[in-house]
Figure 1 (cartoon, rainbow, N blue to C red):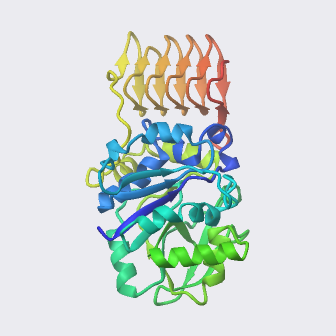
Figure 2: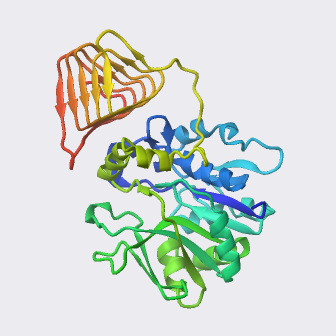
Length: 373
């Protein structure tokens, strides 16, 4: 795997995630109590043995850069290769505002050409899973494919979760014969996991060719037009996949972690998920404080009752407060006697005493970062 490097595009900002991406990119969205979405992409690459990783940033990337720092937590602070954050910059050819994935990749062709590896694993930042790319790379090389797309089976379809929903149709040999992006009625349950393997030289050619013809979207303007003339193949991933393509999906996939089978699969001991470490005391339960079927991160102080919820670092639940079926992010404070049900609280939200806030399982209510109620 020393002959491959990773390239993660973090420029997408799904409007369907609403307040979650108001001040951060999708890659920096918190997930699972103490992680960010990009932790899974970086950990998958490192667990594969890939130690040259470029992260293309576009906007709202300050939170992302603060989280990544030098890449130490992922063993990517190295003299050779390592982690490279590639923010936009203004030149004669580049205005600093990317018109699409192709434009973003073209802006960092210098990094791509300097990379010594032959193959590139190109990834988005809103699809979460836990795997390694060893088998996918071997299958790609063995089949002689030009491009290999990782996919999984998604039999259930929701019109409200159409965000880069790339559907694949394969022939008997596993070759892609058709691609459809955000179809109204998908003809197949094979859905891209937003991970692509190809030779570095092919990526350079496709990007330069698309840019020369004023085409800026990788899926619409590169993959779909070349289905017939390129050998594009699919590689199936059979594990759990969480797509952060809507607020409901974000809520549903976080709450799914309360299922031990899903939690064990996504946070496998065999393939650990690494994240930025913060030295905080373990969660403390004071007085009548209790938690049932919940994930409680370190630094939390629980004086009330927590049920079926996920609490990030440093959350305080005051005496008499009840938190049910909710996601409470870092440094939020729930006032005495307040009741929260089906809520998503972004970082540093303060809920006063004796407040009642409630959403629904199909429509959780979200409070923006730093809000006070």
